[in-house]
Length: 222
Image (cartoon, rainbow, N blue to C red; front, side, top):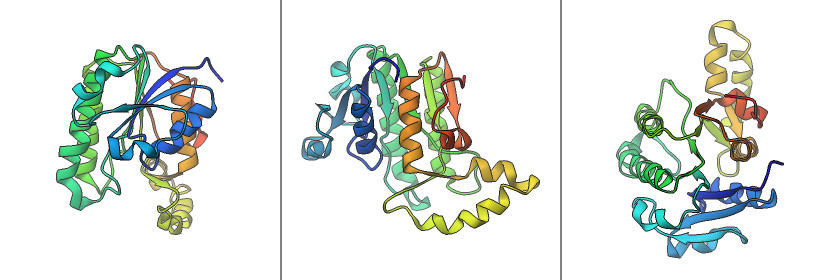
């Protein structure tokens, strides 16, 4: 493992956040996690709780460790086409506030979970995530943008039925690139990829797609 790092996590009480925090703590990193009062108890033992509102960076930015790695995981749960307005009022606003807070804290590295794109469905979701990526670029942060499509795990298992179809599409030249870009990844692969991103900050902005997520480590990727 690389040297222990200080990490600030938004969305730490969620499906992916709880598992990532536990992984980071297990690797010897120090972790702060943003939470509202009622949900703070969901955070793994050992992390430092920062009470605040993900939609208002002023409520938490002053408490971020200067120079920390900032991991932003806030997003509407179970995204679907009917949640287009929530993508703009929650995902977009939370990312805007997180990016501003990271700049204020002089974060060493900003890690953002986006979505694989382009894709034929979920256009409003893709559009918001693309706007967030653009904000990261414009603010000049050293950043890792991770682009999964669908993350398999507890409560998210129905796409396992699609694995045989993906196997075929990835072997046909005409469909290979799209099938790989929009492939399925496991929750374990995502957590490993996020932890690897934390431990291997880039200079500038790097984008990590599904094939790299599946490899779980990408220290040499620029």
